[in-house]
Length: 387
Image (cartoon, rainbow, N blue to C red; front, side, top):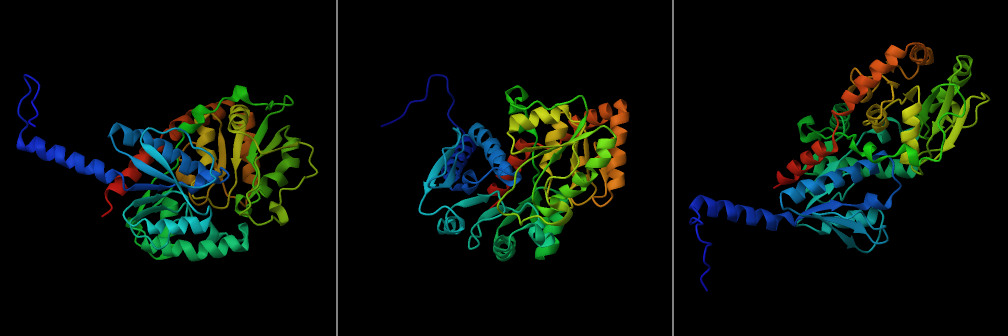
C-alpha cells in the first residue's frame, strides 16, 4: 500500500527523515527511564518531600516532549496522583530495602533514585544522596540505620553512573567522605513552589493564642536539629514577651534524644507544643510568626528555610553546613552554640519592623532561586547522559 501526502505538503527532506527516525528512537528508549518510587510508602519528611516534588515536576517536562517513564512502586503503597507521562508500575514482592535492591534485576533501565538509597549492584543509575549526616552526626540515628547506610552509601557513591545532591556544601562533604571526584556530583536543590498549594484558611489552629509575638521552631528528636538551644532560651524569650511555638513530630530513624536536645517539656510557660501539623497548618504559622528559628548543627539543604521565605516569614538560621548557602543575604545567621546571638537577633526582629520587612522582601527573592522544575530538568539531563 502506498501512503499519499496531503495536497500541498512537500516531500520530506533526508534531514527531516533522519530527525524523525531519531525522535522515534528516542521515544522507544524513553521506556527505559525508571524511577524508584519506594518513598511513596514512607512518612513525608524532607527527603520524601524532595522525591515527590521532583517526580511531580518531571511529569510535565516529559509530557511536553512526548516522552514517558515508569514509576516503580512496591505493592501496598497507596495510589499516587494522576500523571500524564509517568506510568505507575507495581513491582512485587516486598516493600523494604530488599525490594529496592531487587531493582538491580532490571538491567535495561536507567534508574533514578531520589531518596538516599538504591540498588548497590546497578551501574546505570542516578542516585541522590542528600547529606552525610549519618556519618558526621551518628548519634542522631539509631544503630541499625547507621550500620545500613554506612555500608550502602559508599557502594552507591562509587558504583552509580552519576550522583546528585541538594547543595554545594553537601557535594563537598560527599566527595570528601567517599573519596570521589566532586565533578561527578550534580547539585540539584530543593524547590519552593509546593508551598503555593498550601491553604492557611484550612488550618484548624489559631497561630496567635495571645497578642504576644512568637518564634516558630520545627521540633525533631534528631540531635543535629539542635532544638534544645531554643528550648533553653524560652525563659529569656518570655522576659521579652515572646512565645515559642514548637511544631513537628519524630521519625523512627532518629535516636532517642538526651541532654539539652531532648524535646521534653521545659518549665517556661511560653512554650506551645503542637506536635504533628499539616502543610496548611504550617502555612498559617509561617504567615504569623515573628521568625522561623532553624538552629541545626548540620543540614543537607534545610527545606523549611525556603518554605518560610516563600511565605514571607523572616528566618534566623545556623551559620553551618548548607544553611548560609540556602539563606544567602536573606536571613540572620548565628552559630548554633551561641544562644546569646540567637536571642539578640530575635530581640532585634521584635524591635525593628523595618528589619522584618527587609528580610521578608529578601526572602521572597531568595526562595525563587530554588525551583523544583529546574532541578527536575537537571535530573532529565543526567538520565539522558547515561550510556
